Length: 461
Image 1 (cartoon, helix red, strand yellow):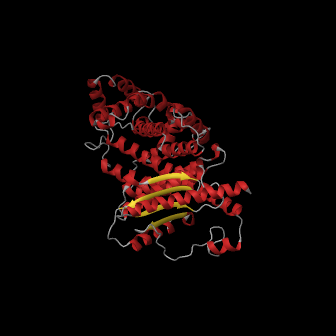
Image 2: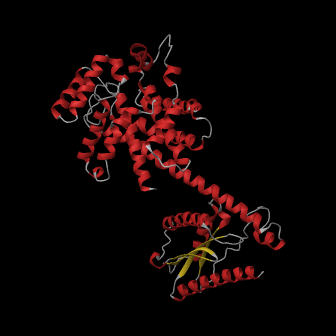
Image 3: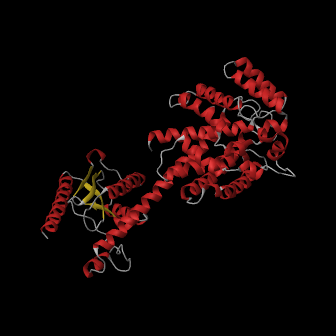
């Protein structure tokens, strides 16, 4: 009983101190605004509640700014005391209708999923709260007002507090998931845009030149890239929520991918710009979010392990024993065996081509300072493409030519890394022979995606 009295005394003292702070602001000639949480029982704050409060405060400050409610941020007070988390700031308004501001803060509260836990109060020049006169519903049952349930003791503090903490935990998890997925999707979009923006790629589409392609151009790729973004989010959500065996998930990834292909063809008027990247990004985005959803540190090894499990026996299951090959990939495999197994073989083995070429190259050369220099950035991105071309058994090349041509391009690409004259020969050779290393371009986009993800992980945001 003495401990309970002592706790109550500390809470009341904290509230008295807050009232004094509001009075001091009022005595200085300013109205004020505060944010607190409605948390029954004790303690009034812990790490979970502080995280929730921080999230709400960030939203509130943006809301105030959007509604042109000016505050004196230099004099804001942010603290955690026995009464919980607390924010107080003077309002830089003299003639504005304070009832209107109170109404706006109620709008802010009501639109939040956990609105009943949020208290945004507005105080007049006497330091007194402005009341709307509305009774707030009980958080636990929602049937009666909060005051009615409290007075009639319909629920225990333990019941209410347990529900609150559970709901906040769920809310913060969902918020974290949404934030992570949005970041990952933006990086996937960025990787696609970087790849298409590289100038003078051998045989490939860029802004200045469609390469050897007569049916598409730079803007065809922009149209397709824009159309794919919603499906990137679906791949990520699947990875974030998936709980089953990894070697059973590929049909679900493919289902999303086929929907993405349909929209891609609509956006490009039936031109195949990104079919290969849809498959690659589907598995890559699934794997990335699977790792991050489990709070594991993103590493190349962890990523490759998941990709291998997702693509287990992919070549055997989908390419071996084909009696009537239909797709380009199937026909190339039928002719060249494992050398023509293409992206399926890459996935089955954890994308070894990019991990031995572009990814270590970007880790060493592609950093924040380079992004500010377009000339350097172009050079490094093109070098990354060449790194992949030196070892990649590109089925795009095999389908349109032969193994001899592929080996010539791989050898020339290796020499072109350090010799601009050799690069010019490679560029002209692809142009003359209508060779487009599209498989290598797709792998470049995946390499960039993974590089961006690792940069993000290093920043711990």
